[in-house]
Length: 504
Image (cartoon, rainbow, N blue to C red; front, side):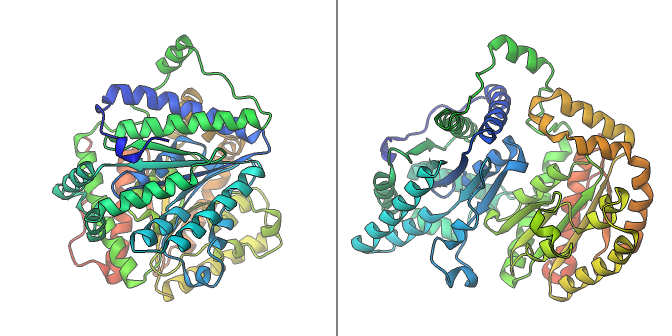
């Protein structure tokens, strides 16, 4: 791999070039992810690098560009008490991906080694830590796993410029901390230690990939290209078949059917970007107060299929410290989960003090899908209202902020979004047979939804029902709901953001 000192800023990538290549990459990565599932392999993506290099944004991008059912992101902070009572690698073992799946690790085993080296760790201890890492990675690779290691680099001048640009923006200055500047003041020591680590762990089976990160668009595309190439090599090495790239004519034909701003989130209204940034800035400030106060935050996202839960969750996550956020996507219970009370699997995923868990669907499946599809007996789902209310009351009594969001769209809007998912290649995975079946059961869900909202909207944990035919309005309203809930908990003293609902 190149020396980090040789990675210098290059020409910024234009928005048009970025959007075109981003559409292509999204399709190609989805295809590679599907091809990987046809092999006995799995993949672990390690994202490391300098402060301000876009590590969190890259983790989020990989998660957004691929099917979230088969990829999971994990960010590591200081070990918890439970983790500290066990060997160092215990917490990594617990989060390794199963066969056919992908995990993305942010600030994993390399981050701690880097910090300790900068703070004066001895050569013997440092070399022992690196040897342990090499053995661990070799063991995983020998078992068939792809380990993709990405280092995002900024030189000292570019890093300072990035910090100053963020600090000059009132809506983004929260992204730069005092710790960032303290580390920047020791840039030479960090660069030297980083080069030592990369040199010692850049092996044939687990090579490092380094990307110069001063331009956000170029960073994203180069990181995606490197990941795509690694996935394709892994698929072939495991006896699979990596589908060929589409020809230019096929791409052009496909692009004609893809909305030109699909990747950009369909942002057209001038007020939306400012409102979104203001709300995210306020939510981040409140999140940091909740973190410092040891207040856990629990978000529950429910709604009709295609109502925009995933998009709303991404806007919330963007405003938070990703090292303290867990997004839990709830599907049918596993065999193990079926052997327990239906609330068991949710108790296991509750956040620690100062952390956040966002549930993409939740325990309300008991009184919705299980009720409508006769997966629970009537006496089971009827008693669930009281059980759920008691569960949520316990969370609130413990000090948690609980935000329950119901996103509502009408039948025609759902049909339109289903059709869009069929047209747009990188959205096609979202449309499942379950979605089609649930649409046929639309009328059966009506009374179940109404009764659920009436019987489980309590003083302790009220429902926030948001009309979601307009995605922009819904995303702003979701952020406003989180801001209002944390402020109501006594963690905010300023006046809440006033939601802009203008359609102009």
